[in-house]
Length: 224
Image 1 (cartoon, rainbow, N blue to C red):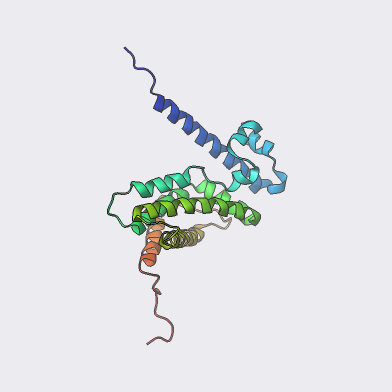
Image 2 (image 1 turned 135 degrees about the horizontal axis):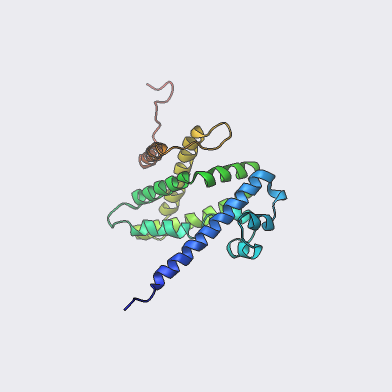
């Protein structure tokens, strides 16, 4: 007797389709704004480029601006869950850094989106506050996860907040610096498969510097 369809498989396919639709709309929005500029792109244009209806667009985004800068809605939740799923006994700081390094490499591997976001936000800095709003929500989830691992209350103990802000800023700066060096004349990253190891090494160096309390990499000029 044949087994009935697995409801989890059906749900998984549905969620995958949603992710694919969202990504198609985001790429369409980024491509069009890179080509025409923000003011000359309508929601209808984005939907048409993605071969969807405007109504479908609004199932995923509230505006064209959100489609340009807002990451997947569950990425903060996913990062939080990775932190909480790490084996017990590992220091919260080390767990956080490893999770963020893996996430940074995932972003760097998505070359198309990374290039387009960089180009669009460079041309339209007014979009950055929207991106920062999303980042704040992600940071809040990271702080909650770190505090839970430590068994502390972030409303009383500032350490989780300071750690998350320092780790995110450190790794973002390291990744941005490294990827900028790989950019071609057009500003598009020229990542190869071999670059992943180098990016990871750069991020680990930054993480180790943070762990060590940011000692100067070279003696200060004029020191004995």
